[in-house]
Amino acid sequence: MNPTTSVRVQAGTKSVGTESSNRVLADYYRCPLSPVRFRLPSQSDRQPGYFRLGPDAICYGRLSSGDTAKSPVGVLEDALDHTGVEPDGIELPFDVEEVIENLRRERYTAHFREEGRVLNEILRKTYYFIRPLLGVSVRRHLQKLYLRGWDRIPFPAWPVDATVDRVHQKLLALSLRAQGLEKIPFVWFWPQGYSSCAIMTHDVEDEPGRDFCASLMDLDESFGIRSAFQLVPEKFYTVSRSFLESITSRGFEVNVHDLKHDGRLYADHAEFLRRAARINNYIREYGAQGFRSGILYRNADWFDAFQFSYDMSLPNVAHLDPQRGGCCTVMPFFIGKIIELPLTCTQDYTLFQILGDYSINLWKKQIALVRKNHGLISFIAHPDYLIEPRALDTYKALLEFLACLRSEDGVWTALPRDVANWWRLRSKMELVRQYGEWRVQGPGSERACVAYASLAGDSVTYRWADEMETPPRIRGSA
Image 1: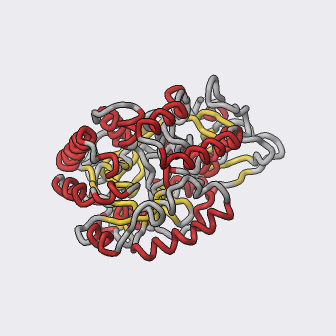
Image 2: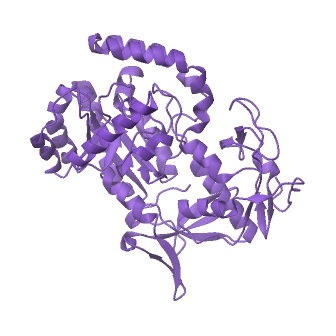
Image 3: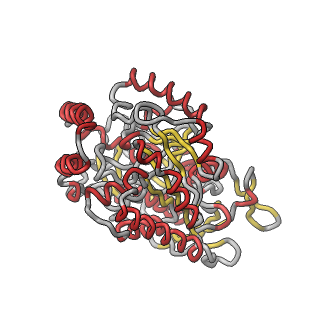
């Protein structure tokens, strides 16, 4: 694409969504609204499909110019070939907000989920009916059969997908180029200049796992890490008031984990609404702020029935989960009023039982990819599976690695509720120009930092505000 050449707008189209497109960038970066206009031609008669935005970002949505594909495999239309950049505006052939929501909410999965819906429902019901009778080895064998071919899934990208984050970077680069700017200030993603963030969460599935929680808290605490425990309210074990207090009194966090952990939370909308009401009651009873569904089953478009502050059910890449897909971002984001904290690292059970890997090499690779985009490093480690000595040794190695990242590379190790609260505060912060300097205003702004996004080819790099140098805690660039 020649960035100085504008495409011709098709006759009869009209520009829509300009404000929302600018707002997408402002919300992600918390930067001043750009005076450049994103013009989006109407495309209501177009069918959604896959296309590219440059060589490294596969998108899903509608194009006003060019053709979309039904599959992410093969040669895809590059939307940049149909994008015009002028000082007074940028002509885009797609709706930015639509594409980002399609990825974050996994709407691109609708077609292949529907194709296998009946068979998957039969398999799911059969599996959960006989699950109590199955040992771990039998369950592992069945799961491997179901997941075979996972390593050949082309999209999202394994082991971490940052498509949503690259789309924001590319759009910001277009905006800077159109205005002839080299950089723009924004509110840094994390408080106090931390380079990225890491959270540890523990989903408690059965009585042995519940009884191991105290020992797991001792271990986490020995590495200076506070974690969150997600508890199943009904069916598997008793959740007493004293057990809840044994967690919260030590500075750890309690959240709700599904309702019955039977794989049926999202099976039927009417039943979902009944269960969501009961989950909301447990949220209040436990004094919890967060939630995670069992087996990471999810439907982001139904979240408006929930009353918790944040969710942790959407994986970044779901190749090794029963429900395929992935939200394609390493950053927290809003689903309505709920903040989503995506799972960006492979679950411990999957690593140990499905991949047969008792090293932290895959976790290190995922951490590096998340940190490249200064995102959220998030884990699920089940107390039920960490009882086994070899698994526990691997988990200790992970905690040691995270402790080193915190002390040497400025990674913020935090409770999920603290991350969600920060992200909610950041969403209301604004940059204002005072006495020749950019300052952050809004509740919590005393912990916020000003950074700059600078042009770097078709993307951007991030630099510190004062001297335009990489700050001590920000390692690497986007």
